[in-house]
Amino acid sequence: MNRKWLKGCLILLTLAFFCGWAFQMEAYARAGSGRSSVGSRGSRSAAPPKPYTAPSQPRPTTPSPGVTPPRPAPAPMAAPQPSSFWRSFGGGVLGGLAGGLLFRSLFGGPAAYGGGPGGLGGSGISLIDIILIGVICYLIYRFIRKRRESEAMAYQSAPGTVEMPYQTTYPPVYDQPQAQAQPAGDWELDQGLGYIKQYDPSFDEARFQDWGMDAFFKIQGAWANRDMGTVRTLLTDEMYRILQADVDNLKAAKQINRLENIAVRSVDITEAWQESGVDYITVRVYANLLDYTVDEATGQVLTGSKTDPVKFEEYWTFTRPVGNNPWKLSAIQQPA
Image 1 (cartoon, rainbow, N blue to C red):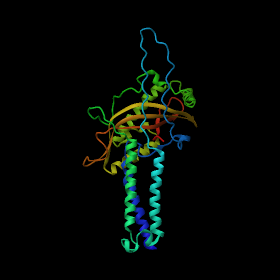
Image 2 (image 1 turned 90 degrees about the vertical axis):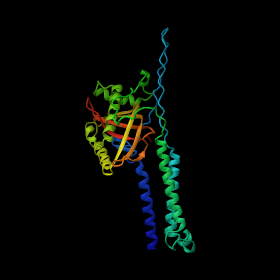
Image 3 (image 1 turned 45 degrees about the vertical axis):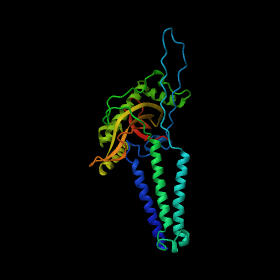
Image 4 (image 1 turned 180 degrees about the vertical axis):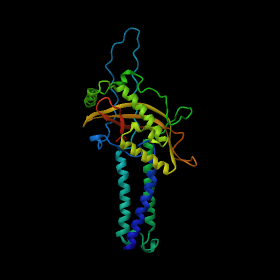
């Protein structure tokens, strides 16, 4: 019995080690992207971010003679997310295999898992155990790889020189005025923005979106430089501690997360509300960039790619005391 328990512990340690190695691929990709949610959104912290909805087009009007109306800007396509069914199915398969292996190892006896003459050492690890461990490890590897491929679709970038992580010039958020229209019937968002304007009549959605884009570039630049102190005033105390701890881990591992060729396609307000004397606004950031991690000493690429850009969307929540006060980043969430 002692040998069986020892054997079970060894199998669990093997699986835990492999899982830790596999998930390390996502540990340091962009600021806050290694987890599904970081920071606080007040009473909505436990809720997923409200999905972005393409803005509705204004009612067409008859153009003046000789004037060609502008074409509406195409709505950006969101990066496809992995199917929740296949995530659940894959997790169930992995859990079933691991559970079956441990049950057979601990309680099935030698005959149940190939011990005896056909095994590899009586009550030791049998050939079937080794095969099952290999299958589980392979499925975990495939699961992680498929997830990264789904979340980070590579596409061919236009030829040009790779830029530094912090980009000082970038395209405007909106090329057409009608893109600023909010989706019809989104009364909750309109109500939240109305409450914010009651205490700050100078608040303007378009200016806030431009400011949010600037904040995104500055925070990602500080992350790539492994020093969040340069953007301390843009972060809540909680977010500063979280992101600084992440960059400290990068330094301890002697790794650098490179963020280059950043291009933000849009910054769209998806939620706005007030609670307990505090304003909250969540924006959906849709962008693409080169995102890869290198070894500090050798420059060898550990994860990501120097040549294949990735498209992504994230939801950033900013907060402030009600009134004309400075905004600070309080949470980063990945799409549900």
